[in-house]
Amino acid sequence: MYALVTSAILMALASALAIQAGQNFDLMRLYQFNAQRAQLVMLAENIEQFYVERGTFPVSLAGLSQTPGYEHVKSLLNNWQGYAVSGVLADSVWQYRRMVVFSADPSKGGTAATYLTANSCGVGAFSAAGSWCGSSKSIWYRKETREGMNEAVSLQRVLLDRTLQKFADFYSANGYFPDKDSADLPLVPGSTYALASLAGYNGDVATCKGIFTWRGLPIGCEDMFDSWGGKVGFAFTSNNAVSLTSETPLVNSAGVPLVVASGFTI
Image 1 (cartoon, rainbow, N blue to C red):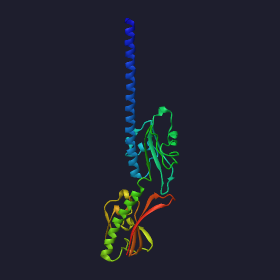
Image 2 (image 1 turned 45 degrees about the vertical axis):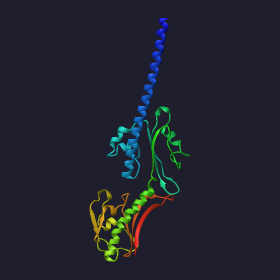
Image 3 (image 1 turned 120 degrees about the vertical axis):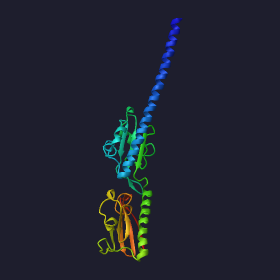
Image 4 (image 1 turned 180 degrees about the horizontal axis):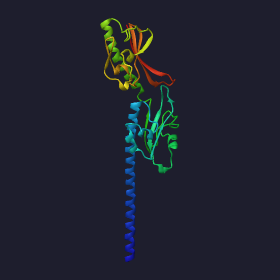
């Protein structure tokens, strides 16, 4: 009888320990998942910032961690993570690229290649599908360069219109648009000049600061350079017709770079 009771107690204890071990394992897996998710969120934030600053995606996660200002990214990297950037894709409006960074359990036997081949929201692989989503059993972040293009174009047009208002004020005061360069040489009708050069600034957007003048017009760095850091053009038709132009890095589905322009004809 004593042996039976002892055996029952031991079996109950073993069962309780097994249950506790299972609970501990599940808890450990939950902590691990949350840690992986937190690391990927921070990694995605850094990739996003890199894209905002440079207009392109990092070549690799290791390359990102070796970029000045992003050295801290190294502490976020682990063997669960994968990263890929597509070649040029196209929809009915834009040419664009797609980036994904993901975190998936390597013990499941999958590879980055098989992960990118699968598609949970469309048909086709990451590098070709019109719409692509990562596995629902993983943590992933996707960005496509076509995102926000319409908003970026609208913003640039607003910026050109703001600068153009200065020329409208000049015309109101003088009865004509500026028609000579900073050396007092006449502008050639049908030609486009860099507004920065007309204002006497030959540097780039990174080193630009202060206010410059051209024919008495105050020209700031925000007037001379567009949203992407390119030089704004001053298209001169006559002293009664001028336009401001921005040759954007955006490319439409036919492969033609998009130019944003705004002008006055009086």
